[in-house]
Amino acid sequence: MRAVARIVGAIGAWFIALLITIFGRRRRRADVPWLEGPIGGAVIGDAPYREVAEAEGLTVERASRSGGLVPSWDALDGNGFDAARVHPLVRDFYEHTSEFDMDVWSKSYFPANIGLWLLVTTISRQVSQLEFPLSPLDTAHGMQSEIISMRRPDGSVRYTGWFRTVGPRVLYTGFYMVAQVPGEASACVKVVFPMPRGNATVILRPTNGTGGALELDTGGGAFGGAGFYRLRAKGDRVTVWKVRTLRERFRVYVDDAGTLRCDHSVRFLGLPVLTLHYKIYRR
Image (tube, rainbow, N blue to C red; front, side, top):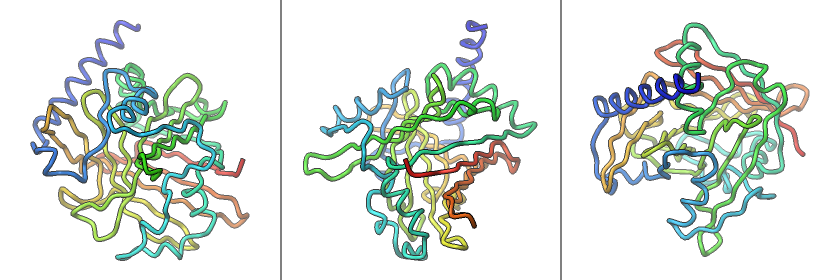
């Protein structure tokens, strides 16, 4: 079975590379600085944190006790998004993520779950990245979460890494930052997931939800706006495919009982693929 999975994974990786070549835009890296981000090797796991630190001269603080996905919340403020309207507990989570733990429940949907199963059981497990849970039982024993602060020599945060695992599987290896992109009026949350010889870059537009909720959405318009970008790199050039049919949405909120929660949905071709629900609590 492992040999079959490797063959299917190789075919799948080739097919994705073909789609990037067909639908992607070819650019010099210098012309799309807003897409600049870590590039992965053959196997991901937690290796990119060390590799990126060495390449950019950063210090790495594993298991940071004070790190946050958005170290400065005010960086998101302005041009349609009012950071002050977000519930203080939501802000606290994003600025001090390492102080929180979470429980997670997942649900996948037919027929998209067939493609998700193929992706996870072949490509994702071979490269040790984006091994999404396929059923509620996959997360029954809990999820491990590590915040990694990556700092420049002056002490400022270049990236916040979020390394999450479920048992031996890598749920994801992510690099978080705040970025201004050409197609959005306000600053966005940018998440880069290194992949072999490239990455998946998710640009999330923040909006204010009811009751102090934070909503993050990839729903954008043209190239340069919020969205999901699949990138392959070669030298000083990149090929970038904005996958318009893939949409992610997060809603982070405090419920009536005062509990912090997050609903994360993924849709492809208009069909529901995966829903993740998180209960978030302070350690």
